[in-house]
Length: 574
Image (cartoon, rainbow, N blue to C red):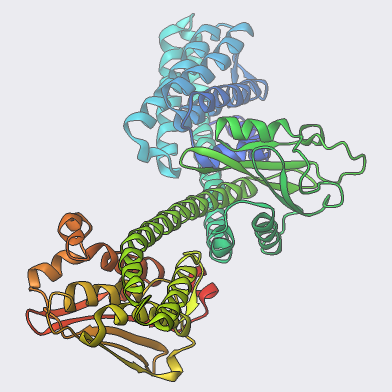
């Protein structure tokens, strides 16, 4: 048998092959197909979709055939081979089965052979995809096409009868079909690669856009998901994209809607879309591709499509992000929505953790206040009682100082105060302690006037002063001195220290004071108050701003801290 290339057959097959490729190209323009090509085959549903699409393409290739020698020269193989290369053996077998059964139904002496070969070619391509995934490129597809069409010619020779007619047919169609269909498969795969490259590039651009949006919205979402933060976030997303409208919801109602339809998609209204409920229930993105699916009752609503993605914190849906179009949503919109939802969800989860940390810090300050109050109140009342008969005016002044101390001590822990106010609070405390210590306590103030306006967390210095008195000076029979220093530095920081010349501590005890797992040892030596101050400083200003303690036995202790002199609202948002 000699293989011949008939120019007419080659020309006609090339023309028919271009029809199949053109149909493939038109299919690739559809958003659903583009999403599939962009994401690749990962689910059983994708495989079924491939079987239907490329099984239909195989049928089209059969109808675009050239009758020759009682058989058909065609491009039927392109569909099953593409299905196998994209989706694996099941996809190739399924598409081949559709194309093969259809070809068998058309009859002819090669009907059975063509049906078997169509299934075999799809399965062959699927096995190549499974065991040689690197073949999904132009050259790999060309080689796969050559192998598949060669297999078809061998099956025709083995199955079709009479054998002489099979030999004659193969001699006429082998080279044209092997060449043209292999090239068609390669061109189709290169087309798919180009689609994926475009979508990857678009995805990268959308990822960059998502990061820019996330950078702007981070301080907004630190307040949690509410109408105010949602409105600000929706406005940012709308301004930085070409979307027709942007909305955010919680689990029950619209929180914000910016863009087209804002006149009737109002904050506070319950959301109507079943797709929104589905996104909340499934935790995955949902596409509303028609005005009916959006379910807006407004007759002139311009919004006809949307992609809806859930916002999740700790695997619990908090609400949704909705991106609207007046026409259909594309793969770029879907990728943007998923990217933004992921970033927003992360921001909301961080906001929730920060809120829990703030609540824990507040609870710990409350516990510290409760620890101070009974102990200090008991000593203060004893001191006042000792002056009632002998020095009633002194007792009266001490009661005023005591009331002032407790009034300031009940300040909300989240409320920042100036250094001046904190020092006034300490003055009330020291007035009572000096009455108790009498001549055994000397207090020295070395305060830079320029530092007095610096905002600091409340109840920050009082634990340091109390620690100096109780654990530094009280054990000494003759008492000692406490020095409170504050200096403004050139780099807009305030250096503050509380120093005593008391009994001091060993390096081992100093090391235990600020360690949480050393709470037992710390409780016996004033460590709870010091550790609380240290952790609050680190939580608010960062790990570089913790409490520093220097002490030597018999020489005293220095507790030092550094505060950035910044606007607190900016500091907390950074």
